[in-house]
Image 1 (cartoon, rainbow, N blue to C red):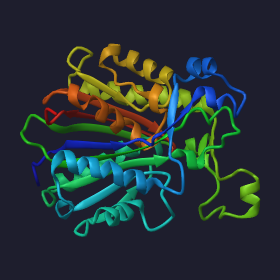
Image 2 (image 1 turned 90 degrees about the vertical axis):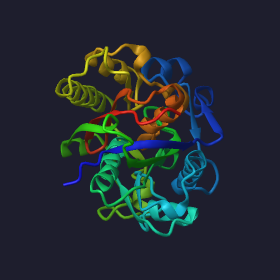
Image 3 (image 1 turned 60 degrees about the horizontal axis):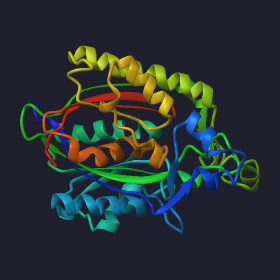
Length: 331
């Protein structure tokens, strides 16, 4: 049994240039900046324009990661990609990124857990490191949510943006850093409240499914809100208890960026002060699998080696979870 602990050792990211503001959205649907800010807390979001897919954003994030860390394509042994907006049904998006980057020595797989995708994929990636058989795993979390968003639906179109992140996972540099603990859950009952109905084997694409709008994301906001608050808070608080953490000893809380009210409610349950909570939803919206690592990317220079960090997310499935780690490096 290996005693190796996995750690995040570098982060890259990419956000598209185009900024979709609340003011522009208000010209598309019956909404307003005031309505969106009061209920969600989003001011703007990034949108990928042109004939480009999730793999294009992911490739740019990997380029930044490699530039920052000095890692070469030939060193990557595994690529794990968290996404619910793959370029195509197959091949998987991880393979497309590998081809774009000239990575030939890795095996590639995608993980589909919606907004919980990064946390789930992080544990998958950590398993390869903890096995003792692998030294460098590339974890990509990326989604082009604009591709499945109905911009005539005022309840969902303000929520989502596009972004990609790339994280390097390696053995922890010492015994005091790396991924310490995690707690995940899921409940298939959530399939009724958050889903993309068509495009799979049950409802293949057809004139009927397109005309019915089944290729757009569907969400029942009130149900999702309640589940998200309780599930994220319960797992995060339990993780703190079993690792003897308090609001004082926790340095950073990194929540999924779905709704500012959800973030505040979970942080309150955890008794964590606002200055320790990473929040960038106002700039990027909900980028699904990319939200948690996008926060880590923005706060990277503020984090110190040994900092206690809890990551938490909730997504379609329903899926949810929290991860406790001690930060492994000073940027």
